[in-house]
Image 1 (cartoon, helix red, strand yellow):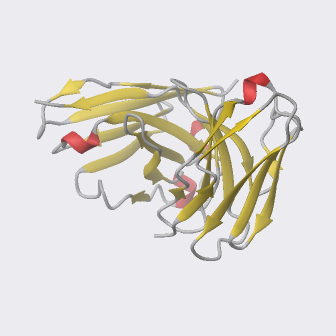
Image 2: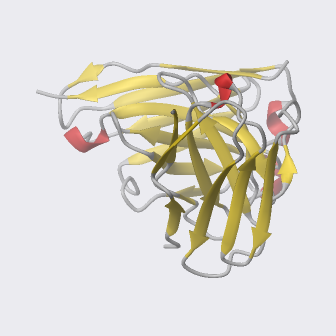
Length: 107
Length: 123
């Protein structure tokens, strides 16, 4: 199985900050990478697929980049509603696998 | 509006069986692949399995942790996907989500998720 490693596991940031989360795959997954946001007690929400394409309705302050094994999720100007846990997932190979999550907390 | 609604979660004893349903609304169900995923309390997300659309043969993929115990199926006339869980173990305790793939075939990203249904396996 492909291992997905996110860093950091958690971070503290203030409203307005730029936040960057990285995700590394244990082997080349091309651009078959998604990002999800999950708030406590809620279902995950799909943010980005194909490494950089935003799902409909996702605010433009979210941006994804990368290919191969290294990927980044950037939140430009963090908003109060962005405090959540973020997961990356590869879908290039079965089984699809997730990173362990990055919790974004209020500083 | 696309909606996915899971149901069937319950408190159940180890070794027993349970069937979850994922009822869908707002899109042509038969055109899409459907996934089941789960999240143990306080843990991360785990993919459970996927069923392709009939256009892609309706074939199914499973995670190793559930293969041989869980069965995914779909009823396109009812716009519903199912997860039959047999020989349940305590480690199957989780919130179970269904999620739609962007296409009917495999290797496709997830786009819409249901709200989840809780399965607790305990004696």
